[in-house]
Length: 320
Image (cartoon, rainbow, N blue to C red; front, side, top):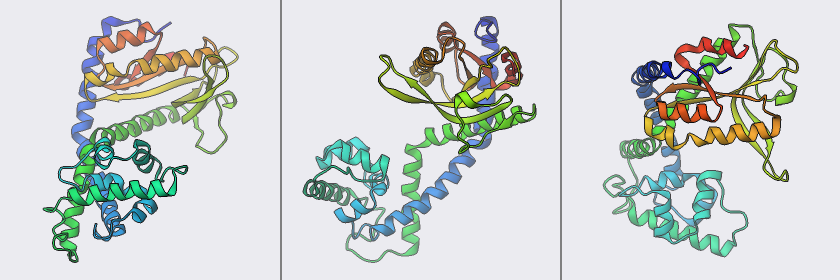
């Protein structure tokens, strides 16, 4: 029997309350979260500038040794450029820039001569587009003052944080949601299993829970196994044997548009989990924010139930 998915008469009120809860949190904590991230990012920009001699010694060798500085360099240009724009302007392979930014390394199989040439083109584009109004010491070349470096680092950090504003807020909200779940469970004497204890879905003891566990599933055909990340897994204290864990996906949203673009993701997860672990798999959503009737109706039709953060005691109805 469903807890919320089969009660559409309550959806309108729940949506309004969820939006209010998210907005209250955003106004109270999002600016502080953003500021803290900006301070930390400013320090990282200062360090990255130091690795390049404050852009005076940017070279293929520097990029090869410190590939993670590429996002900062893209924000140091006028105008700041996206990753794909850098790929196009420098006429380099997409895999080069993506590997440097995402994996903090250069492609290991790339021929040294080709790597040297493409890194040289990246450095040339960055230096050609470098914001001269920001890096005033570039023309004519001279040493930068401490004040100039701090000002430039702060502005580049603002640009970086602006480009990452949504992920910054989303990650902070997810941490808060998981903390709320942890508090609720521990108040009911559930024991948290920290990472590193060899926790697997099939070996969790009754009355335990864990966060961000990878659950292996075999794809259609049975020849390929992939890991499905699950935010929270709870093994109830009691119930029909064998006990069935409750899998929870924590979701928050600051607008109605994006959730409807991504609503199929949960349905795909549910289908894969049931195909591997049977129809008794229980997979629900923990919602806070902008989730409209269209989103809720879609998830309900896929057999996915949910709990609202503003009414967490609904978790009791899932046997906890």
